[in-house]
Length: 405
Image 1 (cartoon, rainbow, N blue to C red):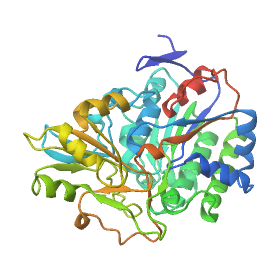
Image 2 (tube, rainbow, N blue to C red; image 1 turned 60 degrees about the vertical axis):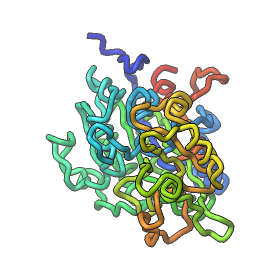
Image 3 (cartoon, one colour; image 1 turned 45 degrees about the vertical axis):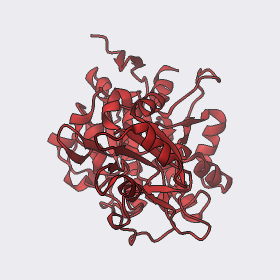
Image 4 (cartoon, helix red, strand yellow; image 1 turned 90 degrees about the vertical axis):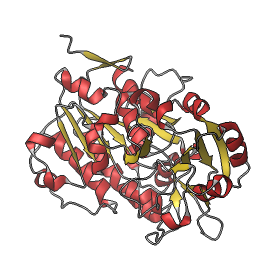
């Protein structure tokens, strides 16, 4: 068996000769790095962005966590791996469900494939919702900050992660959840020396604080310190994001929301159409399940072109596509996106109905993601590469760049 490389979803990846650490910084639009660098908060990454590889690229649509993390680790768009959101309507079962179960994954991961040829692979994610997807068929270490006190060798490839990291399990609604991920990456590199480590943080800070805010700069200062430690331990650092982030308010800080279910109920009758918000996950306090991307299942007999035309006239809506248009333009699995895809303007979110969104937990003006305006993300490697300067990169090209160029 050839143990020098693997082929995953049509692309060949070489086994790394030295440790590689891939970091997905949740919600990190490029402005966060720019502002933190300007404030002197990221001396390590500032140097890397000059001497290594630094580009601006795009994430996949919808610009949510699950589709993009899975694109990064499969090297492929959602049309290949099948994860179309954090949440979707399963028409076969007739229920709305989280897309956390690996049964929804339609492609192999680079992580599992590299482990299959003998590479040591470790994965640490902030929230447990991603762990089973990222760790699908992985013979290696895979655990979350959220449930680090529950790790076992049998299920996670490691016993007592909390003791290894030397930090208590953090609140899921805190910057500490991401710091635990980064601290775990350092501890794993020192103790286990993985060939490949994948670290995925949470966007709690980005949902609450704009680029350049003191709290945001403090978060990136913390992150920079861990990246520097990883580099000193001999790792190549590859960094991108799953999506960006934007304020979704008016000038007074009031959330701007299109309640799409209410709009459709007024047109078609109550409950005739079904609106799905793929941002939905178990952690809604900081965004109220409000994002800039929705899918719509229309009632039988309703023509999609006519419904799409009416929705395009709704204030705050940027783009409406039918199933085939959306699957072609955004490389989405056509069987998991409904009859229409609706995307709101950069400063507007889409909800179902007002009664179904609890905004009482918001203690800062609403910031969220999901739309076209949150697609720009950083693409950074701590060394130069032979990537053609005119090559159009996506965040899911990061493993290709890190291992093949």
